[in-house]
Image (cartoon, rainbow over all chains, first blue to last red; front, side):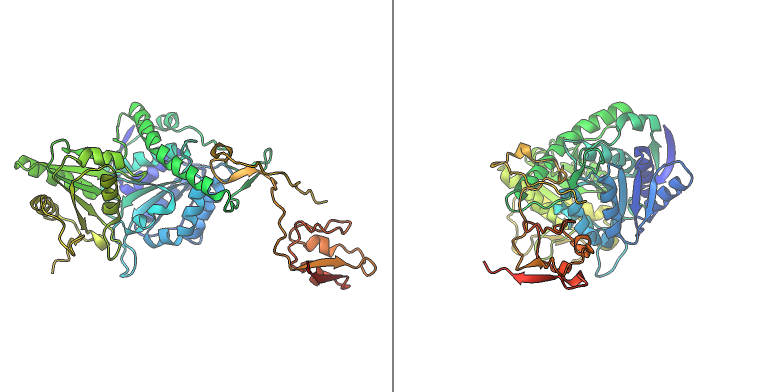
Length: 392
Length: 97
């Protein structure tokens, strides 16, 4: 193990190198560029043996990764924002074909208005693309997520691609001290990629085929079940990860003081770090605050969220996306989970951080207090969602 | 020589466990004839034919063999064979059934 001073992008690149991908195909886009540059340098200096394919677009980047996966190669790609949208067609090809490609997405705003800074509208717009979606909070988690991503995606019970999301700039470009495991440790954790789902001269197969009305449903059902199984495989893999690397993770969600909290903030990504600080300060001042960080949006942690927040007086959901005219999609998912479990807890929705707008300590403290004041009240008409930074 | 997959019966009922985890299956597992959208079929005039085999080479579905037999279970009626024939020995006849 060594200690390095790395940005989120660099930490993810270090994690990818430890996973020994055989094919990397990616197209640079701010704020993902550094992860691609570092991997290109690693291939150049011989510290990573992989085919680095220069492609002409994101659509080609993911198509290339899928093709390589379909001959049994471990593959990596990375993108952001417009690039992710441009490869949207391929996302479903990869997930429906059940090819365990790993992709890093640097969460960034979507045009228009054009903007290079961070929010989560890109990945959350593609929540239904059939990919596992994880959101890292810091650079250490980013590095570790790269290794866990391959382990989970390639598990034969899962065989589903993995999108690791890092908040653009807030995480991709922020430097931290990161523990970098030894290659031998990584090799002990991550076995070689083996699959039946590949071209083979000895056992010729049809791949990526048509399935008409008679057979189509069966493939989708199996894809759905595999995503559900991913939850168990994530827990199992994190257990083994902790044994080998001495660092543990908490599955689909991470909680802070939720056990006895009246007001619980739910959020995802790097905003959770600041929210945790605010939560602690309000606690110290005698307010019963709690925090739930969603680590995985797919598979969705419905049971975990219900268990953690059902006893609270109010749940505030803070997210960096908006389904125009309705509400944030994370909020929709959480309300569905609570309703299906019969949990009767007031929920309020805050969206913000758009185009990189800073979410401050005082923003988060205000959310906690405003939500607490409204715990007993019914939702006001026309106030389904509140925009941070758009006060009249 | 064309190695053609043979048509095999599809099991009557498929259980979920019969399906693969992903879109992959034994190559060449043909379960259905596929020519239903043909509105015209090629007919070769053996008198005019010089045996150049351009139609055999150009057929996108491999339905014409090197003895110039046409497999109408898989011919889509695209007419490429008739277009490519330099002696106009292939004409497209309407399917009138």
